[in-house]
Amino acid sequence: MNKKYSYIGISFVILIFGIYVVPKVVKRFEKADLVAFNKVPDFSFVNQYGKTITNKDYEEKVYVVEFFFTTCPSICPIMNEKMLTIQDAFYGNPGFGIASFSITPDIDSPEVLAAYAKSHNITSKNWNLLTGNSEEIVYALANQGFKLYAGRGDEDHGGFEHSGLFALIDKDGVIRSRKDEHGNPIMYYRALEENGFPDQIKELKEDIKLLLDE
Image (spheres, rainbow, N blue to C red):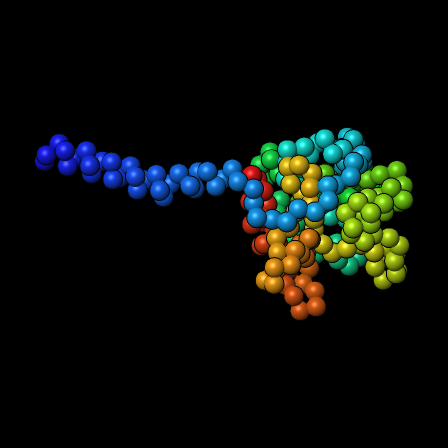
């Protein structure tokens, strides 16, 4: 084969490679097309191991936040099952974590949280079950910090109520979400099937991957 045409062929292959491969590499370092909301306020709670956990423990990490309590008889068990699938999907990834804030700190001591983790297959070292010094502190974090409702409720719900939504936080500590089919930001992800709408766990997992690649 003529060397001239051989070089042309090689150059053509390189050109095609550059067109189709290089953009994929560059795209990995772009910001995901997810809406940014407010930054998560500073917090300091104790986890199931008796260790104090703050915002700094989640710096440069993508994480999911929920509010729950161990004696919840209604939505918590369902939310826990959904969160377990998220744990398993990103198990062992040091860049991902979960923060579950108890809204009944007087009941949910670190020892109680540790027993709950063991009985509910919570095994990831990056999944912190967190308890505070008072209900007021955790309610302020939920209602004012995350804009996710938590408070006293009906006895049918164990005497307390909280949101059935998960919040997705990026590496900069900012709440992020995708948009719905109408282009409106959803802000949070449904952990439950509500009002005829399915949960959004699949979408949440997809968006976690996007944020991990930022």
